[in-house]
Length: 569
Image (tube, rainbow, N blue to C red):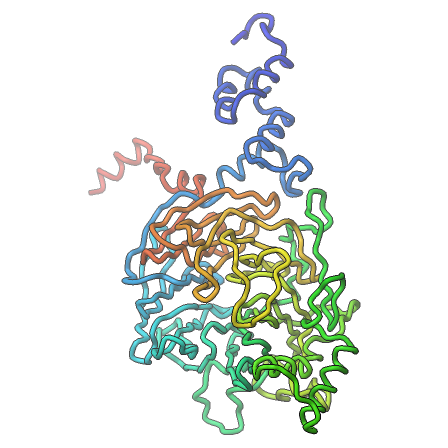
């Protein structure tokens, strides 16, 4: 502007003018001349632009891996998968779940049309195989997961039956020949199932004890069940867990503790700007005043329950209780060892954690249970259920229980398996569950909570933006996914959402025509995201940077080589 002569405006004045502009105007002004360009790249200028544009709290520091404020602004603007590049319409009904192979070359989808479809993830996505599960008496498919070496696919579904039926099945499909290798019963169906090793998977079974008490048994199954030797076990019981007040074990997943200290940890519970952490006493008792005593009976309460039970057995007590209330009291007595005392010095290094939703107050899943899987339990051979229990313990005690005070509708692990992200619809503050069959009303706003599985603490503040509208008895799972930098979730408001894991800000809303049930990042390329919806479509989303790279014209051949090629024809 003023090249070749003395500057008309000092840099400090240009800087203050640029502070009043938006990011796009600053970049445009930087094209005017070299001086303006130098000012337009000023670090303090882009620090201000960053906090103002993304509405990040001022006490949240810059991402530790960022090299400059300008590059960090550009990362959040240019690398979020928010551009729709392809819509897949091969499903004929609601699409419920998506899962990627670990290599990122393939992904699977499950749907109310009762098929499991396997897709090739290339520049243009194409269908490889469609498995129809209706011949096996399935009503629909609901969940899938690739094993670690991407040779097998676990597919979970729901059996045909009455409306209140809870039975399901897990199928194992070979990805080499697309043949069905084995089928395993799974009850309730929303246990879903998961891989423990490359060739063994976890399923569930439910046994009723009373009207509102039951027992969940988790099984380890060999993926190849057509073994020739009768001395080879194809199934083994892992854990037997008591369920109280109509609750059940659901949504099992496995976290690998050996990956906890991998380099992609981005969250820090003690970082500036982090919300105060909620600390959970994960033993048989709880900290704090006013907690529900029924959730963890103390010695006095246990003695009272024992006296009540002894009196009933001897015919001396005639309590004015309904059968359901009496059953609940007896179940609480039997469940006094449901969780182990906390072992603060214990570590999980080398072990795996079994994580699942559960409860103790009502049938809606409001707690997260954690149970260590020992090395000898990683195979169907060897010792079976009950080895770790005391002589008078009938059920396996949980290692940890986290209460979220709300209805859990989704869970997902970070790539390093250290952080557990939980979709929860909160109960009203101070609500009390008087009847296990009538849980408190749940909020429409979904809270995305974050728990550190290494410290068992809640970290950061809850992520919010997405909503759900169904009541407790109609609530369904909304799957979420976590990449190195981002976390994404579906919602009932016809959008998928993407947040940044470090800054806790919502970066994108991804539009569908109906409920978004599932989202998944490519494990090899976080700038690719897939979303699945009740509108029977799967959408692929890429970052603006990736879209530009794919649309860039190929370099034209030099004239000599063009002439040379024409002479050879």
